[in-house]
View (spheres, rainbow, N blue to C red):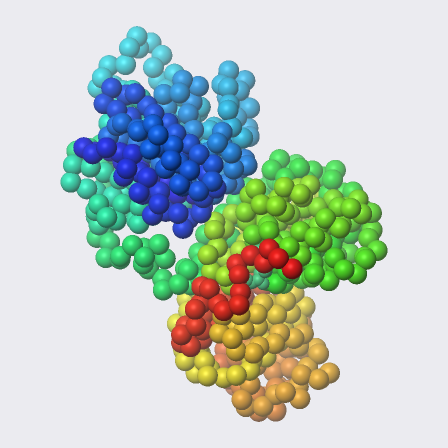
Length: 625
Ligand code: AGP
C-alpha cells in the first residue's frame, strides 16, 4: 500500500509533492522519492531510504526546480527497501519516469522479454518493468518519425502508456512523467486507488485525497480500467480502450484527519472495512498457475521444495497464532500433512523434538515479535527451513526466513489486528492449496473448485460488512456486560479465540474463547443470564454439535448470539440474536466469520469510550519478551 502523488500547474512542484507525501505517511513507507520536470524537460530525481525526513533532507540540499512532478512513498512488496528499489523508476533513457502503487503480477515474464530486447534493469521491483515497457512502445510508435513533432509527443505518450497497460496484469495506480512532455502527466488505474484533484490552473493525482486536500476539494475518483491525462489547463479521462469519457467531480467534505481514516472514526474500523481489498491483494497472482506453482516464482517454494516436506509447524503469537491454528486445519485437509500450531512463546522454551523434514511457517504482521523471532532462530538452529507469512517486507523475520510469502495488507495502524489476520488466512489458504497440489494429495479438480470459492471471498466480505449496523445494535445491548464466552468447533474454534481476544484487548471486558466441545468439562458452570455466549455455528460438519451446545447454553439461561449460514433455520427460535453469513467452503468460513466479531468488539469498545486504536498496556509489535 504505497502512496503516490503527482502535480502539474503554475507553482513549484517539489514542496507540493513533499507535503503530499507527508499527508500519505499513514499509508506506510520504507523509502520515498520525487522527480520534477522544468519547462525545458530537465528532470531532477531524488530518492531516499527510511523516513520521509531523509528525502526532505536531500530535497533541501539540491532544490528541485520544475512545475510538474511525481512523488512516491513505498511500502515494499517486491524488492527490499533500498534506494535502487525506491520509486520513481526510469526507463533506459532516464527520460521517462514511473511511480506505482500495487502489484504487477506478470512482471517476471515481461522483464525477461524486455531484457532480451536489450533493456537494462536497475532494481528488483515489478514497477520498473512498466517504465521499460512504455519506452518500448514509444520506440515502436516513433518508428519512421525523424523527430517528435511538438503536438505529436503528447498523444504518443498517452498511446504508449495505454498499449503498455494492455499487456500488464495485476493491481496498479500508475503515474507517468516524460521529459519530452513536461507539462503532462498520464495516469492509469486498476485495483489500486487513484484520485485526481482539480485545482485552479493546476491538477493533482494521488492515492488518496489527504495528499491534495489543502489545495482543492474537487476530486475525481478513477475506476478500474481508466486513464487520466493531467495538464495545467485541463484534465481528460479515458478508458484503457482509448475511448474518451466524462467523469463527475465530487466535493470532499472531510477534514484531513478524517480523510486519513477515509472518514472512519478509528483506523481499526477503517482496516476492518479494508479487508475485501486486502484479501484480494494478498491472493492476487498466488492461485494460478496450478502446475508450476504460483508461489514458486515469488517465494522459492518450488514443487520440489513443497514435495519434500512431511510436516508443518506453525509458530506465532496472539492473533497470528489464531491464524496458525486455522492453518493447521488447512494444511491437514488440503495437503494431507500432519501440522501443529503452537504459540511461539511456548515452543521456544520446551526444547522441542523436531522432525528434520518439517517446514516451519512463522506468521507475524510486524515480523518483529520477539517470541516468534526466537522460536524461528531455535528451529533454524535445529536445521529446519522457515517460511514467513508477514506483512512487513524487510522486517527481521523476513530477513531470517528461508522463504517469504507476504500479506499485502498495507500498514495496520490499529493495535488490534484485523486486516492482517484475514490476510494471513488468505496466504495460508494459497500455501496449503499449492502444498497439496505439489504433494498430489489435492487433485486439480478440487483445487479449481476451491479457487472458485477463494476468489469469491472479497465479494462475500463486502456482503458480510453489511452486518456492521446489526453489530452496532448488539453492542448497544451488551456493552455494559462484564463477561463473554465465545464458542466454536473445528476450523472455527480459533475464531472463538480470536473473537474473544478482539473484545478483551480493546474494551477490557473479560472474554474467553473455548472449543464448544469442552463446555461440559467446566465452562458450562459459568453460564447464566449475565454472560452472553457467542456461538460460531455456520455451516459445517459439526453444525449439529453446535446446535446442541446452543441448546445447553440456553437451558442454563444464557443469552446466545449465533453466527449462522444464510438459509439455515434450525437456530431460529433458539439463539436470541443471529448474524447471517453467506455460504462458503467450511475451510474458508473463518475469513468471513471473524468480521462480525471484529465489528462487535469495535462497537462495544467505542461505546465504552476506549482508546480503540491504542488500547491500554498494548503495543502494535511486542519486540520485547
Ligand atoms: C492482535 O490483535 C494483537 N495486537 C497481538 O496479539 C498480535 O497479534 C501479536 O502480538 C502478534 O503480533 P505480530 O503478528 O506482529 O507478530
